[in-house]
Image (cartoon, rainbow, N blue to C red; front, top):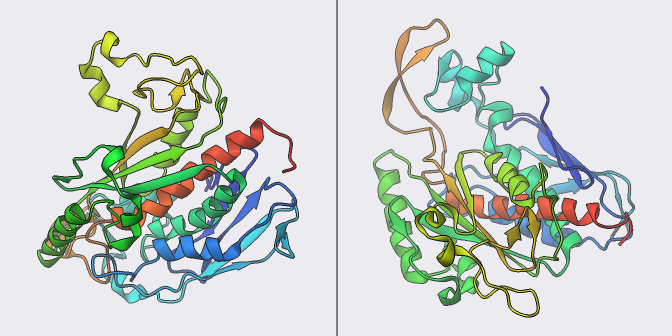
Length: 354
């Protein structure tokens, strides 16, 4: 299996399966001499872990990261940073009923067709459990970025949307509610709705909005390595993501050029920011903002008709502990993937020492 690495200079390779002994990763290209706050890394992992509220999967995983290499006396050494996160709460028997059955909208069928073998326990390598390793690397990437601020939050759940401008939002509210929405009233509505969906044995999707502030000018390349193209790839590599848009996105298609163009101020900043902080594939110093769309979780606690490995139609129903809505736990993952992209581009513009 290929495709387990992300990045050029600041590069992450992940390993492990959801029901194996552990998952983990190797971070290559982290500059030497960087002070690494491992407590901040653990805090970010805690924001992603299961069992943190009544509206996410109740699987209890401590998700404690153990660093194996690349750090000494609180600083990076410039060598590969190796780490593991042990799997502590697997219930493989919850998946025995799908050993020879393909779950609708999962990777089961395509996995079997491609490799001829699949780890059916929680989806194996295709499980969203793998994203915990991304959060570790992304948290370290944030520390490479220093003054760059990456803020992600839930902007919609199903048809419930956060209908406010960025200037009206209170980002301190994000971690005060289980939905991770920066508006308390909207968050309460979303939480009620997710609980209703769960009670029906169903799931629901949503969107995560991300804003990146204090971005240096000049990150990105103008042809194949455009900054927004790499951000799009990063976000679309996250489990359950079905869409990505930055700046004005699809709404920009409804505007005329005279409405859409960002007029310059004398200092090079722009009066509006419909470009989303990126022009010609290169950051312009304005805030970068984008939205990521997540589909409803594919595992339902309802009976569905599917097929098995023999091509026979069979009925199946989800078992075990699953998220009714993935977007609250996706927030730190979106932040982490954004940080990995920006750290990589920043280091492409600099030498290998901080």
